[in-house]
Length: 92
Image (cartoon, rainbow, N blue to C red; front, top):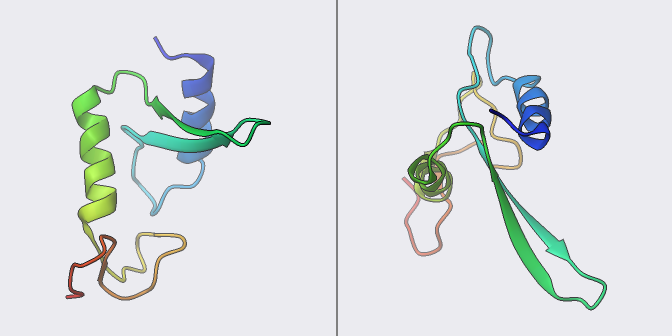
């Protein structure tokens, strides 16, 4: 059963599909927070029913996958050319 937080994220993410006729089946969100003291920490929220392995896979692919220029999929904030997001890797 999904928490209210998971249901909210499903609605937000599901409202902006990268192309038509696709269905959101899973997600992971990582957020950084800062306390009044200036101490920082991260939190993670997974989609309902997602396993820790799925979360690790989503994050790994997001960090280490090649991001192509693709007008059918949106990758906000990323350059429009093929790239690797890990420092030290060569562009393809």
